[in-house]
Image (tube, rainbow, N blue to C red; front, side):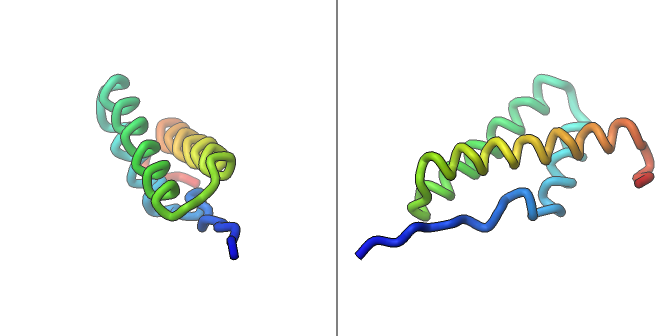
Length: 83
């Protein structure tokens, strides 16, 4: 018997997305990109260990990266936390 594993969408982890984007906004571009790459690698590793398909992992990675970059721009363009 086999089962398809569907991961909880990483894009719903709003607090982690905000924290990651906040850190990225507070450091240099090279450190920020390195940090993001590390976070994405960790996500991929967790999903692989859980038995998620490579196609689903790629989709989750892309969506998570887009969510972090979107939040980063939101924080940069609206300092002080304005909506």
